[in-house]
Image 1 (cartoon, helix red, strand yellow):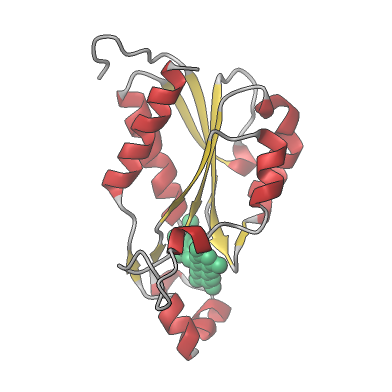
Image 2 (image 1 turned 90 degrees about the vertical axis):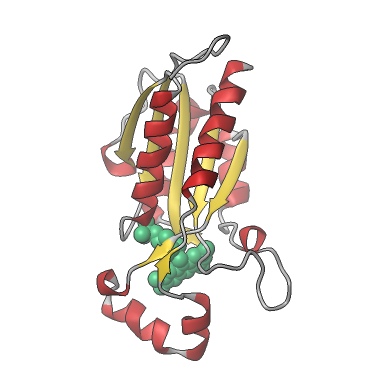
Length: 183
Ligand SMILES: Cc1cc2nc3c(=O)[nH]c(=O)nc-3n(C[C@H](O)[C@H](O)[C@H](O)COP(=O)(O)O)c2cc1C
């Protein structure tokens, strides 16, 4: 709902790349929160998304082996000129588990920045890149992913469970709304 003094009414594209559905869920939730805040929002997988007619862009990808999904990077590259003239936010998912830091005390969100982030930032100048925790449902994994999880390091790095923080996701949508109001 729009409160007094709020702006709303921007056409926003949320484009995402998701292998097993966790990142799609984050994109859908961002979309419904931004819709509640009064914006006109489309949520599409990057392969089905066009960029015409939008005022702002939120683009996110699941991460595998420290990389964004190829189709997400390709989407940004392909549309960089059309996107870069508008407000843009990027997000990635994401680390797993219930701790914010690894066993050496390092911040997992900082460690989980995708390797292509500098190139993405140079291409579209996002206001922010946000890392969300993700989800692993062992039943949906490929055979290769299951084999990785059977290694001792894999079990530690890839615990099963849904670690997406819906309050944090809603809060980030409100941050985007606030920054749009000032854009
Ligand atoms: C084989 C494998 C490798 C992963 N590698 C990373 C990684 O390098 N960095 C990271 O932050 N998350 C990594 N993850 C966690 C995923 O990004 C997380 O599970 C995410 O929520 C998956 O999103 P999706 O369901 O949209 O595909 C990995 C997960 C798997 C199964």
